[in-house]
Length: 413
Image (cartoon, rainbow, N blue to C red):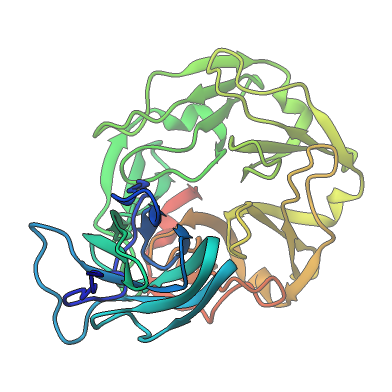
């Protein structure tokens, strides 16, 4: 007597996102066979499973899903996995009876004698939760082979928000840190003193953005003799390790700017402009004793700008962006390219009126929207926040007032 497969509470793939473990099972009789390959699925993604069958005579096969042992029963609004498509090769003709899969048989295939491969694609909703699903494929008519397997659904765990920090040095050489809050209306916590003695430097530059967990960076500082010093971040309460001497001769440059990773190697880069207006790229390395590769010429004409600022990734292309303000107060955007010999795309005009600010500083994501933010200080000491937009032709949202009193600092970074 032929076996009739009745799959219990079947539900198209439970919801969540999984990593794939492949299950395989084969039939128990010599004539008809069923083998399954069922990789795991991850929330928001699709995966294709295969059922390989051999039918000794004309038959039909049903494919069903149910919660694995130890899993809770599916509710009325579950599962969060649906069948996108099902196809049969060779001797199989298939259709899905339920989308998403709920019910005694999610899919059925008619078989003619011979070998066939059934392929079905499942789609897990982005909200799918962790879970494990059993798959049963068995002959309903014309045969008695049966195969079982299982797969996992893996939910996508959101990445924790890591806020970034703004630093300010006052006239007495004291350095303060402002940690980001993640809130647009109040983006910084109260300041914390890092330490004194920072007046020895005429330039302080974040090569990459620095998080409140004190990762990222590093910081470089140039003293009055033109010696450049490196401060690594600590991943500890104090933000910086003891300084390391990079080398002398850096007084040749009238502008040093940390531009983040524009060369696509995952390490933050530094640009330097000399007195003739030529811009040079120093690619970062992960060696604190020798932190930069030999300089590469970017090009001339950069004396047209009175401010260069790395603003992080405001265009959401995975590379850091840089803004440059010309003498008329027009701001221009330069996106990274991943090419160290040509590290910037052609400039895009942001707009005019930026001469109102005496300081522009990229601060990383302090508003918890996944995009880097920029702050600008006006002549009255008021600090303004500009959030990124993902749009290179309009890279900043309308400004938001942070507060006054920021003219107490002679540099912000």
